[in-house]
Image (cartoon, rainbow, N blue to C red):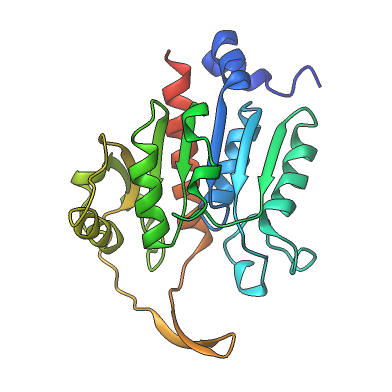
Length: 238
């Protein structure tokens, strides 16, 4: 497999490729955004990645999530993705943690040991806690804002968290973060400036009424690819 990363080396150089192979990454969330981010990272030569996700593949994931197919329904998303990543690069070190990051188990994640921390979490409370803890480290930290209810890929942007606009998820995060401990430093976010023309719908999920957001693969994938691009850019210029 000598030519596996040849085109990466042609673009970024041998030193960058060697650096990618040594970078330690932890990624939280491998769903609609995170799965595409992971795919891009592995195909670009990043070889040491811990993925954290508690969820299983369900049929409604198939429209937008990389690991979701009719054959993987019922599997843990992280397990399905780890298997795929090893098919792409048999030498990749993928550590799977089939659990949700939370305030209660945060102590089990040695964030300071990683070079990059990627946040693709949906839960507001868990995301807030991760933001606070990740920004205390020296790692490159990047976070995804809301990719649901969006349709226009040309409005996807990267900006500082405090400058994100037209994103209700980011607004809610900032409001809640200001009530307590603020992030220790600024960090980049991937988001969309699109004004959502669609609304969540009330649906019966696991016997309970729940608000569900529509989402599309071309938007969630570009969010994920953009995050991977920022990680690639960060470690290719050092």
